[in-house]
Image: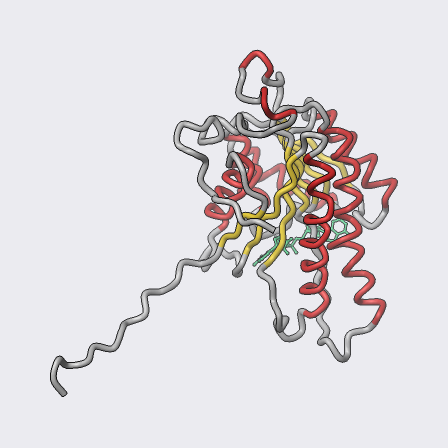
Length: 268
Ligand SMILES: NC(=O)c1ccc[n+]([C@@H]2O[C@H](COP(=O)([O-])OP(=O)(O)OC[C@H]3O[C@@H](n4cnc5c(N)ncnc54)[C@H](OP(=O)(O)O)[C@@H]3O)[C@@H](O)[C@H]2O)c1
């Protein structure tokens, strides 16, 4: 697994206002050429969530992307639409449970068509049911894996077909910091996110052969308006993860506090 830089190369069209990649070996080779640019660049976010989903959509909307959401609940869809409407941005949407493979497939296909064709798919859905390693129930593990891993695989499978021949075709998977010792009570989520990262590594070469980039966005800290990871910064990180010319894994961690270094007197 390689770790990619977050900043696009100087002058790269993937910078603000850009978002395409001249350096790839596959379909993206033509992405920077306006004559090959698709009429519409479309983003579909599966599971926008409460922490930063609207910020992420807004960030891509500012770059001219048509926006779409697949959500488990109609309430989330309405909330996201209302928030984006304040910026004059429309959001296409469909409701589907990610553990329902036919429903998720249909929803992604429909929203991708609504946004004028898929350019970027973000799989952001997660389920976290509390339980420790030695006590968690098998059913809890299965439910968690169904949302965090199996649902992601369905989304990748559907997107893979929709992204072929689309310039700058990209799938972004949201993961969390790896935990050799999972945070107490979040065992199932930790295993789910590790599974998602493993899925990304296993599928990436097959997608690359089709000209589709698969990148993981690792959020290595809590996202909150008060920090340590602020939603606007997270949203920008997703944009950079899309726009960067190369790289597979894009990690965002809170800036470390400068720890004071003990000063010894010159002569003791
Ligand atoms: N927040 C953090 O501090 C943090 C830190 C590191 C990584 N992350 C990652 O960032 C992403 C978003 O986090 P968040 O805090 O915004 O999460 P969240 O508020 O819990 O949102 C999770 C999303 O997943 C959807 N979802 C859950 N089960 C589903 C199902 N069966 N079918 C369809 N959708 C389903 C939820 O749908 P509904 O809206 O309909 O409920 C929601 O939109 C997650 O992948 C998370 O692991 C977050």
